[in-house]
Length: 305
Length: 303
Image (cartoon, rainbow over all chains, first blue to last red; front, side, top):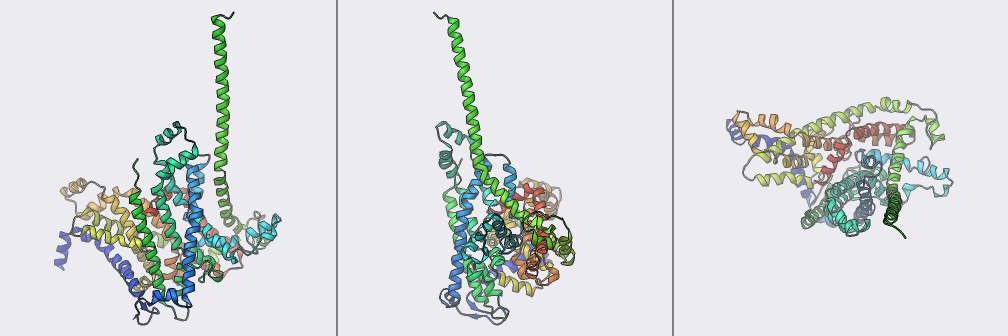
């Protein structure tokens, strides 16, 4: 005991690191390691683990029951990422540009656009469910009130609309951060650049296209990765809107909801933890690949003012 | 024949005329610019108004009585009533979930701040063997979202008695946000001058005292940012609580809200009241601390 105390006294950093290290090893590193091991095992979460090599991964791509589900979930996850890119990136750009010009009420608008970020996913999901309800939702009743009753429909029953709804919610909730990153980056561009361009006769569009845009590359890279990671890992909103099965015929089934379904979905103890973990590992590998690409891109694109 | 005076006068007139013209042109230009700016910012105003309407749906409907709600789906309440909100608060026991959420958020945030600062301080202020390696080892966790390792995490937590209680939630939130918090804090501690440390040592302060009394106060701004990020993330967390908590009495607000929806699908005004109770306070908090929250969350997202 005295020996240990002496050791700590000579190495004060041990005292500082110990509590964090203990937590980290037990609750992060061990589960992390265990996740990789489990993905090579057949395991229901309670009984014995049986090592089966790469069979889980093979199963995800070839099993007649799981493969279509997995490929659909993978496809949907990517669809959400692409939809978020299409909606979020131009919109964030637009907001940042307008707010940076300090138009009337720009500060208030900035806060309003950012606000959904702090509301919980559950509340947002529930609000959307009530908003789009076919009978009592405000959208259908609003349409009926202005004589467009024929447009009213069960919004959440249509696979295409449902996908769009999820992407729009993700955008509404998440656009604040990309917007703020762009605003911060725009403000760091020296005003002389634009003035010089204006003297040379550049119009607004040319100033934006040839000065602002190239200098925003680092922020843009960050945003693209941010949206990717949020999109590929999305769970809460699809789960709240479509339940465990990912909506009608799996329209919004993502890697997250499929993982939850395979791991915790069955009440009759037929959960396949090994398979679920394999899904998680694939998700992880996708994310790591994208992060590595981001880091290398950022290094190449460093701009000096 | 025109004399000099005439010439000068004419010149002046031309000058005045052209100045007037320029001013007019400038004014017209300015008006044009203003119009373009307005046109340019119009979609943003529309977006904000739409956003407000969407939110007000949750902020107005709880005040309609059950009967009025189904007759008056779109308009403002004709008779404002607090009945729904009181019922959700009292009968559905949302006050209890509120307390749960507050307890978990406060404890988890404090625990993260203390443990992460200790770790970050130890890693960034002392020289020891493999310092760099240990440092990057601690950052590994940032690459692992909790969703991916939730199964083993759940099993470990169950063995340690951390499932289905607040103590467990606090410990688990501390662990899952440790890497990110250490990353942010270590970056800051590295920038503090070493002279302060040495001066305090000469004055006879112990290592912990230096940390607690000198370094921590200097880190106050960065601790504030970190506190904002963690508090909001913990307050809104759904996935980890969904898996770690199953006793009804121990639910946090997001869990309670989702559960309340599942159990009361036809009772619309009550659902709105539940939404109202859970969202309004966070919106108010956001507008009070908006500067801190916006910058904190933005800094947190890019790592």
